[in-house]
Image 1 (tube, rainbow, N blue to C red):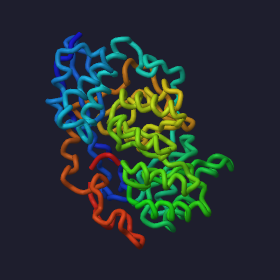
Image 2 (image 1 turned 90 degrees about the horizontal axis):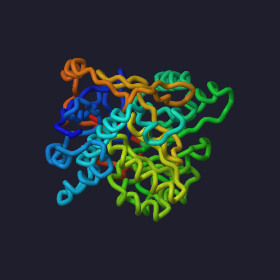
Image 3 (image 1 turned 45 degrees about the horizontal axis):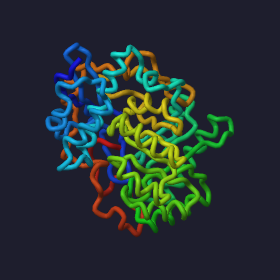
Image 4 (image 1 turned 60 degrees about the vertical axis):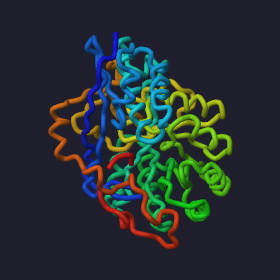
Length: 393
């Protein structure tokens, strides 16, 4: 079997409500979701979530190769972009192709990927993550009640702009999850998406911890700031979670060496091989891992095979338009199916029809850092610095 080509597709995640974080808000709730489809000479195709940046250059490392050599092909893709570097969106292209190759490999074996990778249990514990910074109190409560009805007892809220508003919103969600769990204490996390300085992070979280028990604080400072994360970790009771925007093992080493991360995260768009390698590195340091993403299907399968998986992010309960997945959410967990490969099916006609709804990639959103991020003395209204649409929430 040989790899013969690829196709790129972009569909929409329609949240049906505003979504966003401390950096920006998508008022119409539409987020671009790119996919790559890898083709073979035997008609088997694989699907991977991720961008298409420099894909012609990266794909040159795969064309004509046997798709079953996934990990070797992963390293071949890294070498292909050696001079320019693989960081950023190019790493997402590598991750998308890598995920598609794993999908093909499992289909050839006639097994779901979780089984091929050595997973024993199809159940993947999840936490709720509503990208909820723009919601008012009533909508916030209603949203997390929906998650609670699916058995989820942990939640991650977006915040970081106003300590009193964060306290109030965390308390509202805590009460929803506590009632659903008949008094059981829920897990509460706060994600501020790199919006603070070190001092701001310690002051903000310390104030919250006077009344709220935080499981973790996520991306409190810039992603590469190992010393800063270590300062935060030593200054608060909550664990520090970070890593979703790091692209390569070399970017994790300084944080782990500095004792700066307590929960190691990787994003779905960076691919399965990356997740497996980061998980092994974290396991060597007795650290748990937690996958991140809107559609983390590949990492859910991979999570079943690593000993240090903690919990996976569950964002929208519905898949992107034109996409079907072979799993469902029940009793606080993803339950993976038995369809060979990743179990993803694409309705390309529906995706083509959704194309007219794609937000303009040049418009604002969570992917653009506000001018005053890390330099605010006073609370600001969520989304006040930029309001509009994009990806990687």
